[in-house]
Length: 227
Image 1 (cartoon, rainbow, N blue to C red):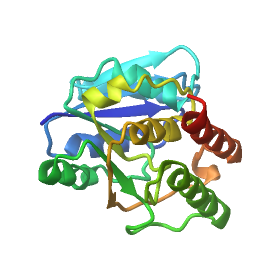
Image 2 (image 1 turned 30 degrees about the vertical axis):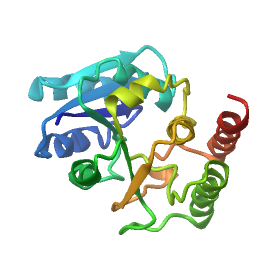
Image 3 (image 1 turned 120 degrees about the horizontal axis):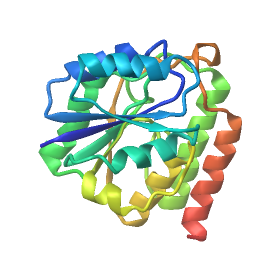
Image 4 (image 1 turned 120 degrees about the vertical axis):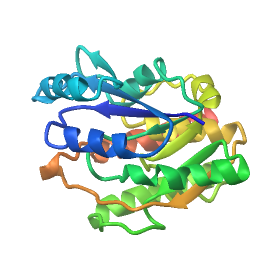
């Protein structure tokens, strides 16, 4: 089974090399697809240097910043694996836990697996960010009749043919609720497994804000009642 790792990258010069090294060390049949989403720091040059060391990487570029959802969709056009997983280009998530994500696939034939930050070992978030994440997960559960604990997690592993058939449209962070809503509306069971998490703060490059939370809420409502 081949795993496609989709990595959106935007101004991640301080962590990019380390995360690529971590992903490359994972002992799986895999392909790594990086999409530079219009970075304005040293990220493009670092990507060029990394490609020399890891020629097997697939790297694509956006001419301007379009958002995480757009970068994921660009990466999907290059993906050839049986399953795909999203990997942020920071160091919040541990790529060695791909093995955990794949366990429900090998044991139960799961089509979608989420790594939950709230049922595993994690570095504490600020209270309001934690509350926002839990609120959005609760709204998801109420609207789509599911018991998800972490809808906003980055680690979403989905069977490739299903993922490509979802006709994803989101440009920014509303990608997270969109993919979740569309999976659940198709009655696809989402497995959750505990993962570790070392969240960073805004001073360390965190990009998502409360405005993205409002967008996520609207997206959940839109795909439940309007789409």
